[in-house]
Image 1 (tube, rainbow, N blue to C red):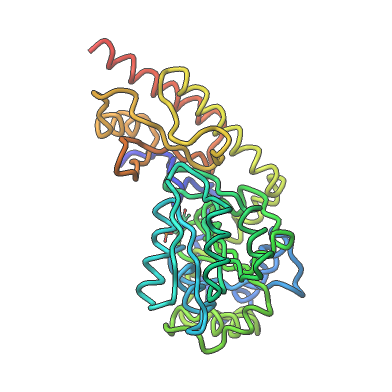
Image 2: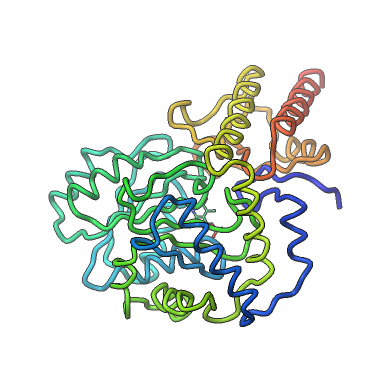
Length: 365
Ligand SMILES: *Cc1c(COP(=O)(O)O)cnc(C)c1O
């Protein structure tokens, strides 16, 4: 098997030193290990810019979706109603979760390449007084659009709603002012911008909101309240924890801090993204999302011509050291390139050279 770099938005390319942390076996109930869990929880609060008095962190086994489902099943009671704002597949996945749990919910849907409309959401909130919770995805990884947090935050404050943000693909790579935005639950996972390996998700939540979740969960393993209560005592997870992944994540956080925290990482991602979009634009590969709505995380590109064959292109690029991501849109032919992870300017330049070479080859064929 060739070794290649992942230009996918998680799992992503991690550093050798993060992977090396997984060479040791750790004991879940030993103090050394519980100490790692507690350290991670404190570091996440610091990265989030929130105080330990007001916020707490719960780690949850599984991929990011498990953490989202755990918040939905624990934060929204049978008396509540949740408005789910969607403009992509990850928002729609939250709708599916709500449906499976049997939550009282409503969906507000915007086009995949558009921001949700503030006035339209306002109208729903005016008309439907039963709504208690608002949910939105920050960076919709489906397209790479960066959704307007100030807008949803303003509405949640004006109408006094609990605000849940799926910041899976943005937290750690984009500064999010959680207290100022009044975010009650922010969800992310180990294998995105913190640059760890897959295996658990985490929730940064307001303590008073968490404390009110007791007994809400319709699932034992995904009960956020129970997980919090147990973990908050001394760092012990309920049920087996992904020990290797947790150790690697702890190293990944240290490396994020050493890089210069979130602003430095944001700058690197932004630079990667800008170079990528500029260079591909020059050779006729245009983006699906307009520049002002584009995140620095992942970009959706339109096929450059009708003859373009993604499978052929994918293999060509993979043989030369990079793995891309297919598109997820039904109405237009697209592919995606993520630029997060242990990826630097020289990787993006190398990738763009390969893509240029490929297109030149096609023209001569
Ligand atoms: C990655 C991601 C998730 C979680 O996906 P998993 O496959 O369960 O890890 C959820 N929301 C967004 C926006 C994501 O990018």
